[in-house]
Image (tube, rainbow, N blue to C red; front, side):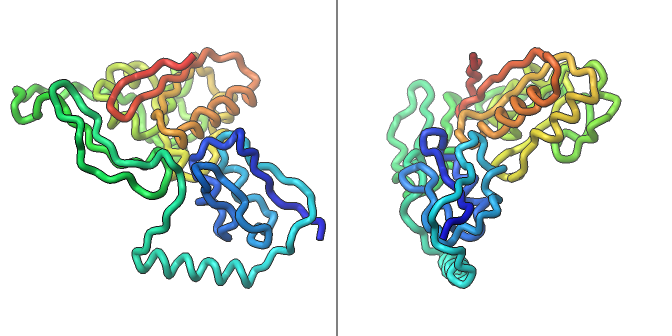
Length: 266
């Protein structure tokens, strides 16, 4: 039969796996680090996966495809639930997933960890070894918080809050504050801060950010993201919001590595 069904542009896919998580029917899976439509009859054609894709790799097409089989989907979901409850792990997923140690000066490189079989590169396990143990350093006073407003979650912030007036806006992936030690003084200071995680929140921030930019006199936007692929969703949301706002607002993107370095993006 001819019907509406998704198609995935593998060239655009960044391997984040968000679409596979959003597809409750199990029609999408990760194969060699790339999202693929596994079975036509598992795809209901409703497109719940489309908003989750940060790169726009998923679109609708009309083509010859097997009819949506609800009974087969329910059976597949039962099998998946049984597998998860049993603790069984399946091989596959993103090839970038592996455990590794980030080595500082004079620290041995061998971490003795085996590569993991599956998952997203942003979920890779690693131990970060610092040069000097914290217990050996003198205790110093904690730096003062630079946070200027509450709430900070993108989902919770009101779009017309008075603190947005004339603000320099910081939009950050929430992991960045943990990865980069000087986050408060370098990024939060003198800015209004909004944070979120495009992978765990599983929402498109673009609409709300567009309203914030439209309704307020925002002077600049700084985006701080992690280096992991799934974090590209927060950059994509800001890019869309800036375009939809119709305003020319200076903005920049900076990337924090998992071992605490800052990379400036062009």
